[in-house]
Amino acid sequence: MAEPVLKVAGLIKRFGGLIATDNLSLDILPGEVHAVIGPNGAGKTTMISQLIGELRPDAGSIRFMGQDITTMPVHRRSHLGIARSFQITSIFLNFTALENVMLSVQAHDGHSFRFWRDARSDPRLREPALAALAQVGLQERADVVASALSHGEHRQLEIAMALATKPKLLLLDEPMAGMGPEDSARMVTMLKKIKGSISILLIEHDMDAVFALADRITVLVYGKGIATDTPDAIRRNAQVRQAYLGDETAGG
Image 1: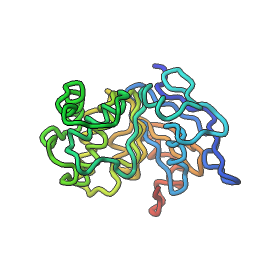
Image 2 (image 1 turned 120 degrees about the horizontal axis):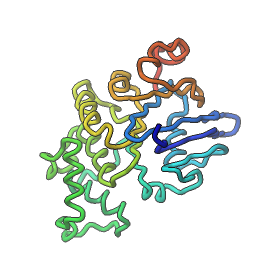
Image 3 (image 1 turned 45 degrees about the horizontal axis):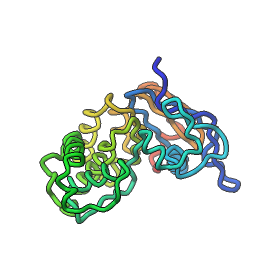
Image 4 (image 1 turned 90 degrees about the vertical axis):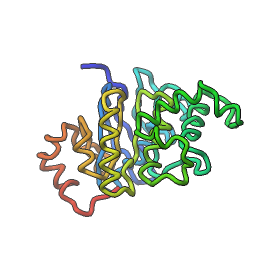
């Protein structure tokens, strides 16, 4: 088996008396879509905040591409090849889709976060930005101002902004949040196209999307990973059904 791109071992995070991450271990393999699901309060946001570097764990380790990154700051993890999309989009509404992605390339490459007219024609920014827009199916919308894009297109644009930095691991936090069935189906189709070319950690409530995309699924309950397996095995797991899949009120 290939070495994991990301390996989490014995991760613990406490907030006072609350254990938000309870001795969590998981790994993500090269090219794998690894979904993490769980009910409200399961600790998914706390987990992803530790992986990206916004929170420091109280115990345990996080290794990326064989390197210990447990205490590494956010910007250094980004330069190593970890990119993230957020539950709420973080795009510049007054800029075009292309300009948003160009800004992402510019910021990742460590250039000044000033965007003069000359920079907009710089092929070092335009070419990777156009390629990323094509990956998510927005190439025809490159020159549309972001405020005129639909909610689903905003989500696609944010993923393009992450892909433009050429990450080795993409952390997707609720990419289908707020979407209707048509936009969700479009997002699943787009993610299937990039599947295998990059490792993806997917946090998502849309179970149809999870089972359509994931190679493996980890189920998180009260900060503890109660099962990691293939989608079919997770469906059949009685403990998982009781804890999450059978709970109609489950959420994030």
